[in-house]
Image (cartoon, rainbow, N blue to C red; front, top):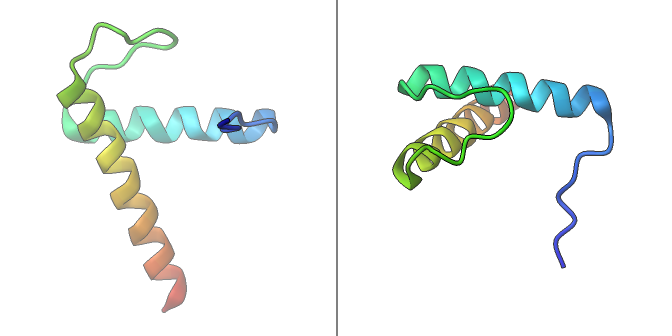
Length: 63
């Protein structure tokens, strides 16, 4: 059973901003709330961009 809910409201808001920023960087138009009308490819590109930015941030923190 997955427990991926964010319980800290500030963290949830930060992740929403991060998601919107990643979406704009890859050219995907997301709305606040439901985005079930985007394609799997678009959703994947947003998620991929988020992972890429998280890895870059982690690597920069190691330096």
